Length: 119
Image (tube, rainbow, N blue to C red):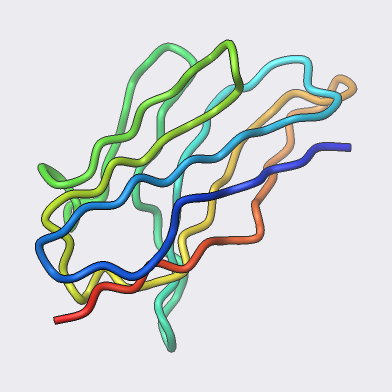
């Protein structure tokens, strides 16, 4: 059993900042990657940022220079620092992890946290 729990969403004015956190727990042997995706109303879910076990990070073009992903390996926790937020960043943000569990590598998702940016 693996749990993925996000926190930190909320309402913020355009230009503001938020920090999302996500902790993974359960019967995990190792974590290959952790990251964030988002889904706005009427749109498909899209990748926002990922961080891999070797520390490499990737970002969606729409958030480059504004969002920063980081990870506390000891706590199995990933963070997303979001700055210069725009109304188009409004979405449900989902944490995801690719983890090794019982000999298999699987993708797990959190329940999501709402981020609303007002203009």
